[in-house]
Structures are given as structure tokens and as C-alpha cells.
Length: 149
Image 1: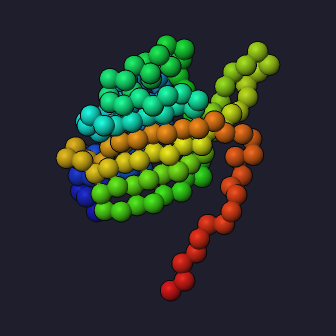
Image 2 (image 1 turned 135 degrees about the vertical axis):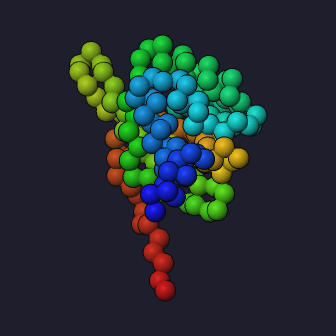
């Protein structure tokens, strides 16, 4: 069992491992670690809240470098809903973002979708799409489907 876990980490881990590394890189403003979470493909895509679409590693790297010039990003993934298959995993989640304002620490919410593909390098992010959220996004709307056997 231990060997299988080690081998999975060597070839890119699981989508959950990559997602954890992505958010850790944001917390530490570590551009190299962040970019290692992305697939080595020309058509990877990233959309930040209220921003345009960035296609390709160069554009994605540039936008995160600009963000990191202002410090780290304290975004915490919550309530992750997953749709998984053999070679792809889609994670829809709420990011709770801690921001410092002149009035003190505040929380903001972002609705995000992270898409992972199994690549020759292991699981990697191929899309991150985030939209502005509201405090109401701290609560899910609707019911999670159930499966009866």
C-alpha cells in the first residue's frame, strides 16, 4: 500500500494532490510550484474573477506573477464537488479568500472550477475558471443528487 502511494506521487499524484499543491503555491506566492501544477500543453486556460481568458503557460504565468508582486493569495478551497472519470476530474468549489482591508481582515468568496487531466507527467490542471462570489455563496443552493442501488 505504501509503495502505491509513493509511486502515485512520483507520476503526479491524484487530482486532489495537484489541487492541494496549487492552493499551497498560492498561499506561498510560489510561482514555480504553481506552474508545476499545470499541464505542459499549449491550450491550458485560466480565467480570474472579472478577468479575461488567458491561454497557454506564458499568459497564465504572467498573470500569477503579477498577482504575487502584491503578495500571496490566501484562497481556501471549500465544499468541493467532483465529477471524475479515468482521465479527467472536474472540481467545482467555493474559494474563501482572506483579504486585508483598511478596516481589517475580511473574507471574500469566489466560485471556481478546476479541471484536471491525466497526462504523461501525471495528473495536471488544464483549466482554472473563477468568478466573483458573494457571502451567500458560503451556502450551497440545491440538493446533491443521491444514487439508489
